[in-house]
Image 1: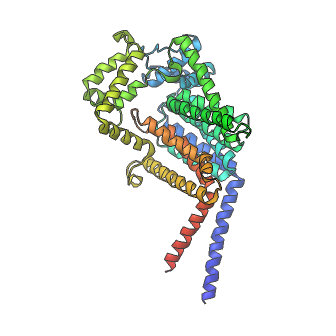
Image 2 (image 1 turned 90 degrees about the vertical axis):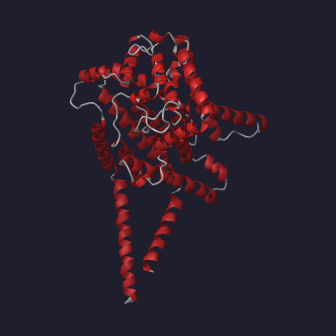
Image 3 (image 1 turned 45 degrees about the vertical axis):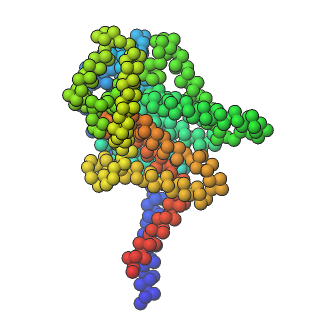
Length: 475
């Protein structure tokens, strides 16, 4: 009787195992069907999430964007100025509050020159970001299942975000996916040409869209340069390994592109507006002021109510009214921010920590409370932290050169980029879920890469948990 029962249990376990294996084989063999299904799912998400009413003609969409009065109107005006030869000037608000040139340049090429309607522009960039991220997962993991899971996780975030047409978030998502794709190709090619140059160009594009990585890129470039110089001074007869050589070429390409844009910006406008933009100190001040609550999302009306100084300083954005250049305004606001951090370090740090938690979803117990977006965000970041720990443990167990294995891990690199981006962005003002969207690409890519890198140890852990659970149930 006991033997018969044992045989039946074994057969049931075998059937479940075969079913799961056949299901994974079906997905792997017919992945194009699943990808097409996911693309339709994502398109429906974008259609629901865009702020513009469906059914408008291309000209009506352009008129809507121009008359909207928000940042998207400024971006479109800058794109038109790039094409018609006016230059990179704020002819819409006359306030010299302009972003770096990356997003308006994409608008100029795709909308003004090629004539794409604003909604098509947004869909195109978002869909391109999904495709690039899926290609990165396929190239690095060689698994179609990873591609499907990556697209599903990435697209699930989109359903909870209202994408503002022609706003910068779609370009940031595209730039992040382009960077992840280039990094996947760079690591898979073992840092061989031409991928270091392509990866460097992708990083430069990401910085031109949103320059949060500008200062860290300079620091990393100096570190890699120092390592290369040390190698040629002390170990001249030993060839430089592909990892260091590849990153040296990649960062050299990034610095070359940024230097070219910087030189052109100074020749044309006598400042660095094409790289740094002209408004960086304003969102920094609105997040770091004694008159403004440190914990709470940015709302212009609420900020006006809390501070007369905020109202007076906001008038400085109009050069025609104040006679102050954007450089002078920048220095004034930076002095106020520095003074605030010196006078109220605990309050400033508390505000930064609150904003950092919004980007990284580090909220105790929030996985089961609040908005569905927050639940999914919290669970994803928790999974990322667990995978980082498993990756370090697997390097200590399996790798011969433990530290070198950790340094060369693309999964840990992308995870580091995710937390670095969040930490820098937390210095600035937080205005809701749409400010978190640039981190989705990095978060999903880091989870995918680390899950692939730790698959052996993850399978062992899963089997151990299964056996332990089964043993406890039988007892």
